[in-house]
Image (cartoon, rainbow, N blue to C red; front, top):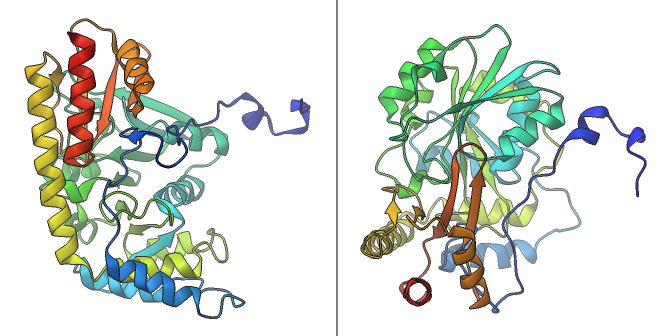
Length: 353
């Protein structure tokens, strides 16, 4: 066992972030980590093959310029200097905490939401403050309250585990009431009807993070990005790793930005499956929160969520059991293919029978 006295006190005290279970391929129906059940666009696979045959003995472009140009065009941004690429949006979130929150300072997040935010604060030796959602998953006024120690506010939108959204107008109001940056984590925004990208051009303190893991089916390449005003991008670029994105991931992400037709078809298919899943769960007696993401959060009146999770796992179906102290527990079920969702619902029906 390692001698904890060798490490920084903040590291010795903290609890590690626990990602969703990753079983061997093919053994389970995986509906626990919000991955896209469909293969990525063929053009992306082709781009990876071409890049793999290239000069892998050379370092990649440290700023992923080709991707930044493609993303700016795809998202109607003023230019590539509004984009910073990262090794998944988790690295972007790490850079944001590192860049804005000093030791002993504070970041704020809603509760319940993405628990990695707290881990990032702990690594930094910073404090974190949770503000509970209202019963209808709206943000209370206290979420936008200024504080002299508050250096960063993180807002997953759509939120996990609920799949609920805060409107762009409300986000803009929050930003105006705060004296620090407001990060809108849009990991699931491609499955929602709206997003906050336009707000970035009107307020330097509003920034948006995105990932290619969910909607583009590229969780395996680890690529995310930040959209912020150029002055912010330039400062954060100072603290990223020298070559934080490898050549294969840059090629894949750049090709993905040209696959708008593919993305629209996958969005329509998955949103339709999401609606069918939510409707059937409701018929089975679950309380289902209307979702704008690629998953559904549900709770059953019998409260036996962990037992149902274990029953599904025993039948080779993985969903995410989540428990939040002083709030409750439930199941988050990722949107899979229609066949995968039918199999999951059949096992749930068997358990409830």
